[in-house]
Amino acid sequence: MATRERRHHYHVYVVELADQVWNVGRFRRANPDYQLGKPFVYVGMTGLDPDVRFDKHKAGIQANSYVRDYGLRLLPGLYAMYNPMPYDAARDMEVELGIALREAGYGVWQA
Image 1 (cartoon, one colour):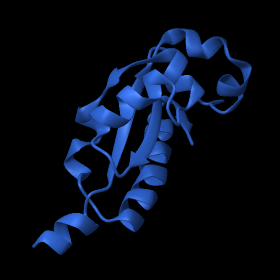
Image 2 (tube, one colour):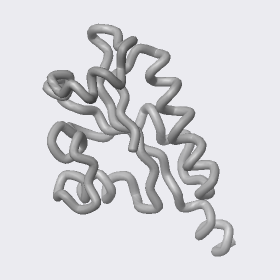
Image 3 (spheres, rainbow, N blue to C red):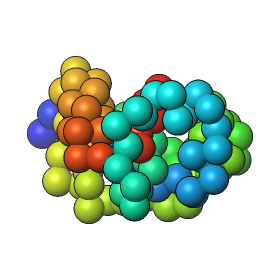
Image 4 (cartoon, rainbow, N blue to C red):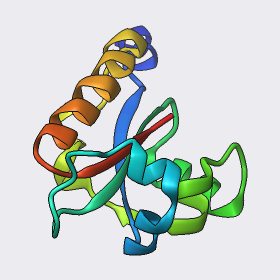
């Protein structure tokens, strides 16, 4: 059991970003199909608890600049059902979740 738990300790996570991120040209260009009124989010994966990873982003430790500067809160309703999982599954789910949210009209940034 301990080996399985160690292998399945990766998580995908979604951070809500402040509306001001839309003023960043690079973010806007990455989201040409953004639907007005939908949230702006960052989708990531980590071997840490998502709360700890979010705190590290905000503290500037191995941080994505969008999360550091515009991150508001985690949105566990969009990711908690998938966690925890093995590394390969988390890596794939990060991409799939980002694509799904973008198709739903969200403004999405992924590392």
